[in-house]
Image (cartoon, rainbow over all chains, first blue to last red; front, top):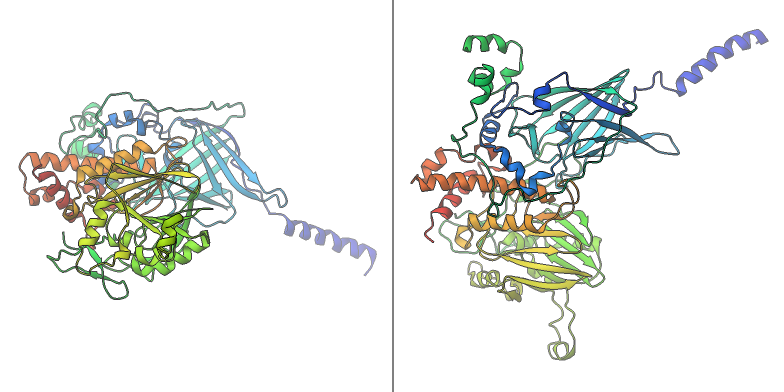
Length: 283
Length: 346
């Protein structure tokens, strides 16, 4: 082979070798400080949902009764005061977010991503090393057990072993049998978390919510200590709740906003835009 | 409430009690299979009557000196150290060999104590087989005069457990099955493997002989069947249980337990059946039991019959989480037990 032919052949060979040894693209890392954006669902996420507002939730009768029975005073019990949001709801509240990654020194392989959220300071680990989820008899936690994988530029996370918690902060529950799938999508300085909850106990369909953040390199998240105290002197073991049919606040939401009562009771059909046509007919 | 399992005479196998039988029973709870993604580990499949099908015993380290064994009937707590091994409960009789094998992977020290949380066979069935492999530390005249007395682990329980087990006639239990070290006071205390262990009596709860065991340094509570997060609370009315006593025991567990951070971890709670828990899980279970109790109490005060109470569906919001339509402890049986418990004349 002549020298100019060897040079001509060597160039492409070198390029192929380089391409084979490195990924064609690097994933868009979600690492960094992220400030929450509340242009979606601000009234529910910050001031909080109204009692009896189940609109847009694919709930069943069991979830509805749980919500109807719920009394906000239960949060005054010492054993309820310091509960953090679970990982599937924590992104919805005052959720200044930090994400960092854990890298194995020798291989430089990402073992995990960790998240920290401002309210109640919960921290979560998203395992990226292919480890299995724990057995059924292992403990459940507020943040659950999460494993992740890249699907192109989207970080897909699967979480189970969650404690019994909530979908909306007015008594609509999410059971400990739920499995949550998330897709973290970064587009430049914006991050979106699409959360999909499948709950065989309380939901008739998967429930999907998206939450957004903007990159904020100057963000400083404050500590969030919590100490339980006795706020109201009650008999030992008293649990605030409304007996069935006695909650006086259930119709306030529909009356205040002019939403038909049937719509306020929620259900899967209330998630879809075509329900507005039905709602107009109910007025 | 007749559908309790008892220990049979063959293979230590389980047999259904005929209606009206007065035999001592054991409750084997159907365990709900959880459809979680990527779960590993051999979670025992269930026969239609709730007994494990080809069961295996699984070990879960908890914290401190304490581990949890799952799959032998009721959960078993293992505390191990240089002084030996202590168990809370003994599982089913036919699971004793597998329980022993599991214990040996934790410690090869002698078995010294078995604490029975209550009388049922899925927690006491393994008493004799396990205790016979153990030994107590005896000395002086005691060891010299009764030479074989040390070749048996001590079985501790509230005296009502011993009384009920000794009264059983179908089948009659051997003396070696019975707790020999009983207490009748509100609590019993021992110090073992470097930690204080409190055995706390809970009257009229799951039965009339329940004990909660608190490992103070390991910071673990073994509850027996006063806490069973895999099902509705099991109230054995025939053996002195009551819904109010059971709720009292849940509140006591909450009073003892202290979470580490943000209502998680800290004191761990090993239930009679079901997964490892902490205070927040007991709180959720207590809330459920209290709310349902309050609903049924309200209906009892209004003079409703049992059928009317059932028709009102007082458990609707919790049925898919804790309820069952088949097996030993169905939703209907739970409602009936609560109704009768609240309707009993005091």
